[in-house]
Image (tube, rainbow, N blue to C red; front, side, top):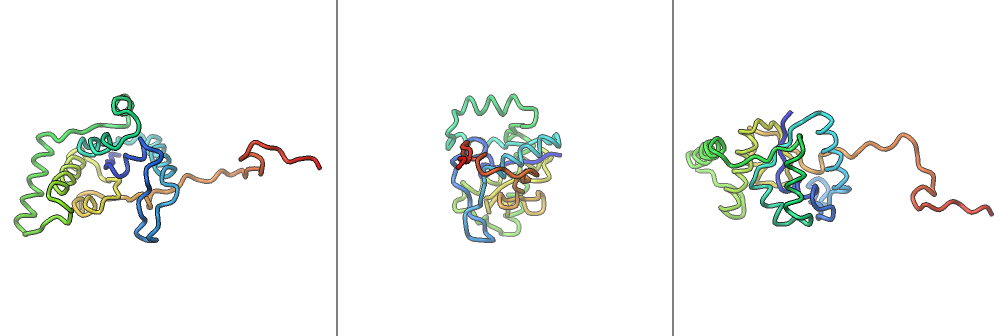
Length: 181
């Protein structure tokens, strides 16, 4: 299985204090965002999945990263599960084909700026040529650009980790035992 992460998901890998996105179903912040992404990573690793990180998404995260860029790159590069994928010749051809298709049908991207639209289109093109079938993203523009070629999963749709079968005793959370009294 090959999946891709865009910056809106990847940021939770490097910044545990990143602000959660808004869940469109509730209008509230997605709960336990960090736990969802951590559980997703663990699940994908158990399935021996390849996680494609398009270089434009990586660049976005490196700019906002709390963790030092070189250390984050070392971790990604040393993992057999991650593949940092460049905007190469194949991605350029895919990108151009999608741009030409939009021009033909006179469709403009809903992205706030033309630069963002091209950036997002590069991310979708890289994911497609790398063989990803799913892209994890909370970016509405990515969702629209990926339509018809990639399944998009938002953070709110990522399952939470399963609850432990064994309940915790009240004192397990704070390390204090009840008094004998």
